[in-house]
Image 1 (cartoon, rainbow, N blue to C red):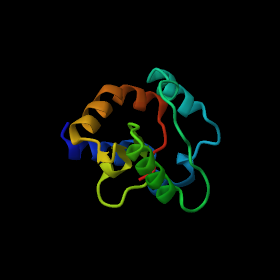
Image 2: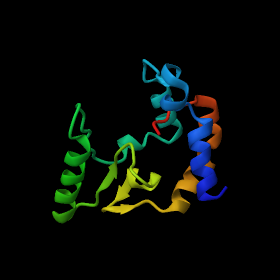
Image 3: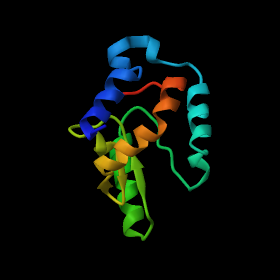
Image 4: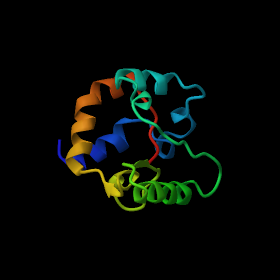
Length: 122
């Protein structure tokens, strides 16, 4: 698949709240834990900070990532949604993930996505 075909797949094949409504919402973490399990539980492979709340999560996350990066840490940042380009959501040391990385990740896990049907926020 091309990058655009991959993005189209994410928007059309996975349950997107803005497209299918409340049925995309899952009240438990079963899909999340199953997907993490199939990805070899990446959340256990590195230290992370989860920022939650109603307002300011994106700004706080970007500022914290910048501070840690200047302090010499390698930072990964995931925010959602994006403004113009899906790759804005995933940054490593401030740089957006490559289009090819998105294509490869989705291609490598498309079967898992089909089986688990994780929800997706556009």
